[in-house]
Length: 131
Image (cartoon, rainbow, N blue to C red; front, side, top):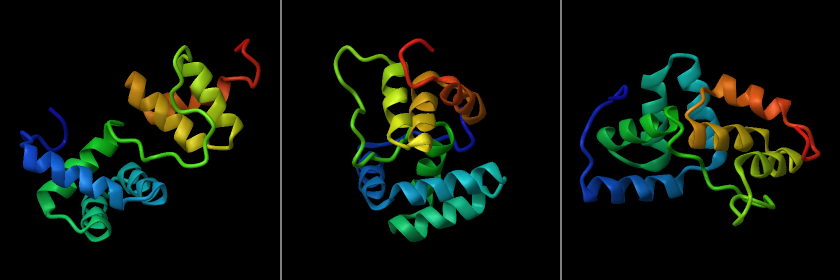
């Protein structure tokens, strides 16, 4: 199990879904920063304040972000998922659009890599298809 282990009910899932709609990609960046600087309590408090949810749901959402299970919605990005595109192609599209953080988050969420490993993967991708 993860940092915070719990069993989610349907009510919990609804609360988390509503909370996710209230967080911007900048909020998620701030939460990831707090997590990487070992300030989990501050990250949970931040989520509670920004999303207006209770402690239990804030902890669950922070855990999802920490494990890469939640990637914030991407706006104005040409490709997120298109039939027939693989992870490298979608990551290249995000990188080309200047969305390096989103590209890294995509790799983390789909592969289970750490953020450092995913960052190295994104950095190694070339703009052409011969990476």
